[in-house]
Length: 408
View (tube, helix red, strand yellow):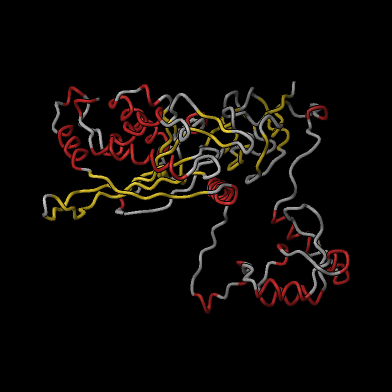
């Protein structure tokens, strides 16, 4: 009996998955539990397997389509079986390539009614003069709002877009002038990251506080751990592990920083679910150390390494990337002295870790060069005022400066 293959629900927060590769095509034989396609959530890649053996009777989505979870993506059964009852009522729109091909058949008289995929989903009306002018100047007129009759785009709209710096259509870039150019589609994880970063900046009132703190004790503890007996399992602990541990133990005192802002309410959390940024082959990922405030330094270090490895090997699970209450991002190893972290909404704060460098300090009427580590705290001013945020950063700085292994 024919059976529908559904887009699986990968984690509680995943609403859709991107099909990145089909391993089978219509008419191919498949075995039970055989991977038929690869799909991608916002940060991880998974395989969809055949629920039973049979023939791939129908495929409803193409590579590159973003498909809501639990939607039918294919039908497996025996040749000749009736499958009408399994066919989904609605699938995605045509691909960009199919659209371009369809436009080649449009006659000149129809050019003013030519439609293109747009964020609004409706037709884009443009006069022939405006269209020729836009194409000549390299303006993507599908992004414009028309001021002519019925919303038609006229030459004046294109001229306005040109004066305001509307982006060029990539295909119009003159290689004779620019030289060789590589076109990289913004899709998959990169598209999701770009959309989330933009949404974060546009939808929140972000403010960043910068400070630096004496890192002498931090460095001394790290050196002590490096020389510790291997049997204790502490020699692999690094500066980032120490900072994650300190942050996890400071946050319970500042629940206003360990919180989510949801427009009409603020959720303050008792438990610390600590996210940390990872530079992975697929782009930025933020795995979560759940209940970090209950873990020892050794346990935090071990969990951070496990999650980091999973990100690098692309085996991270969706639920391991969700549910954070506060995030730490470390660019200090790259020599960055100060930066502005972007909030991981709906979290109200994110801490940036900067490099350790020598700073001149006056002690007993003498200048001494003391190693200091930079801290950059970005917070949502809608949820937290400047003074409370500064107090959190001050308390954190004191904890770092006074950190000793005997206190863990």
